[in-house]
Image (cartoon, rainbow, N blue to C red; front, side, top):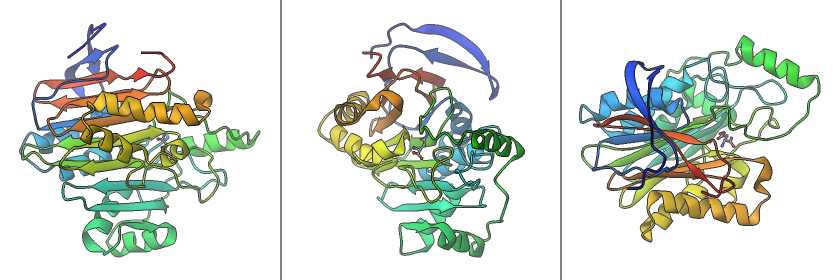
Amino acid sequence: MKRRNFISRLAATSIGTSLYKIWDGSSSAQGSGGPIVASTWDFGMKANEEAWKILSAHGKALDAVEQGVRIIEADESNLSVGIGGLPDRDGYVTLDACIMDETGNAGSVCFLQNIVHPISVARKVMEKTPHVMLSGEGALQFALEEGFEKTNLLTPTARKAWRKWKETSEYKPIINIENHDTIGMIALDSAGNLSGACTTSGLAYKMHGRVGDSPIIGAGLFVDNEVGAATATGMGEAVLKTCGTFLVVELMRQGRSPEEACREAVLRIAKKQDYKDFQIGFLAIDKQGNTGAYCIHPGFSYARRNGDGAELISARSYSGND
Ligand code: SD4
């Protein structure tokens, strides 16, 4: 394993008194089998801790990823997932999420409003309906029937930001690398099974009705228990057009490491699309618990947790020529 430019920085984190390491320069990390969990962006550290409670007790990867991302959905301090997410241009917070298990089952909701935990609704779609995906009003109706409560997701902070944006209404769907965006989480449990979850409020100030990659199986998330799992963050339109995470998993099937597979998927996007104004980050895990990531522009990091501890790993990037 190449761990160039290792910064032996130990930092107190938002997850309490625990210490974690920050790697810089290589986005590959070797696993020694499960259990292990990896998730996108810095807030993945916090989500991983929740998932780890389940994984370290020999629980299922499916339960771990659902419970892990729920922490971020309920956290109003981020402006991109669950409650507190920035609204669309008309002021509506609309959520997208999907989940996939080791058997290849999947559930998804998109354009869902007024529900704090779309990931759990997605799981119910998977387990209780003959369908994969429910949208909008139908998804809301199903959620309410399943006992989810209606909540106003537009927090004062998000409303203020939206009002400010409305002064110019300038629509630039740029995924700022400083923003802590969609959470995608993938995990391998001690039984050797993989699962994944992905949840977001999508692009801020998007058109009303817009749905991105995050709830789409094969775009924002894909799991194949024989090979590996992958998740994506960033400009959903670019990921959709390349079936991004399906591609990453298929590349791993052909023998690429998780980082190599993510890199190849980024190259496909960069070759065909004008990537200068948007960010994409892919994160993958293979069946052995090796993880890797790659992004278009520097700034994407992912969080990883296993029996050795917690790490935040910065991904190599295309424009950074890593
Ligand atoms: C979307 N992929 O709706 C999401 C947004 C995102 O990091 O991931 N931001 O296009």
